[in-house]
Length: 332
Image 1: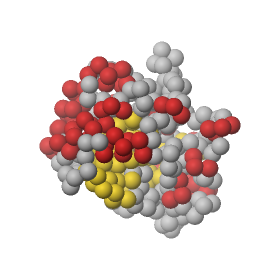
Image 2: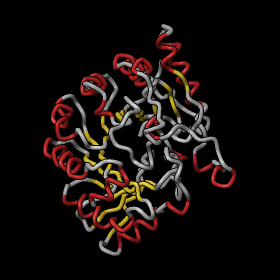
Image 3: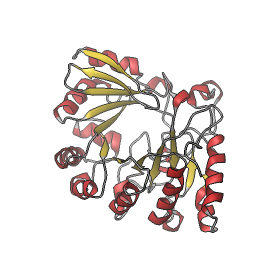
Image 4: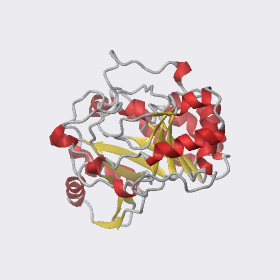
């Protein structure tokens, strides 16, 4: 196998892999999780083992993957996930391993994650007001999440990022407060446009706080200057008065599909080449059928080749669309 083979029909080459380790979450964010009374989580036997995940990572590094992000659901619900971090971080060809988490267990896990080879962490934080946090996230956990962010900073997890989904009618008035909080924490804040992958099906275009609208809110309180968006990155960065950076992730108003270099591996072993794709390529069955590495590599290469053009080219806004899984089952 040679590196650089994970190329699609538009000439995009995948370098980053997001690995979901569970679809379960102790939160119930309105833009992610379906109604928990009706949801059916994957069975334990459906989930990839750490050894299976590591095998896939080793194959994909030979195909050019260099960066891994561990996600969920909530990845820290997966028992001993630090062992997977250590396995992946020690894999030849992997340059960095990061994690996205809701922050609930971060205070108690930050140190061991750092010692296991985790580079940085991104924490979801959608409000600084306790009752509003509960309304958006489905749990009274604001103090615990803030404590987790502080612990991650203290043990040296870097980059330390905060993700905020900006939603009209929910938290748009808190944008300046969140910017100030992030700068005080020495964290980089990322505002994300509300995407139509919510499990509750409440998404509408009218709820989307666009990147430009977010910038207008920030400019009311801060002087900002544009840094730009590096090739393959999701965030367009802005410097805030020389004190730190904020990022805008704008899949709705300004999609960044043309240089996308990310793939997703779901916790039940499906390879997903686009967040909005509805074709799930079953790698788990190949592992459990005893296929050798060359066969699995060929399957992965052919799956990536079929990668959709992306949301920028999808007419779903006007014509409707076939919905992918909700975010908890795709992987954040």
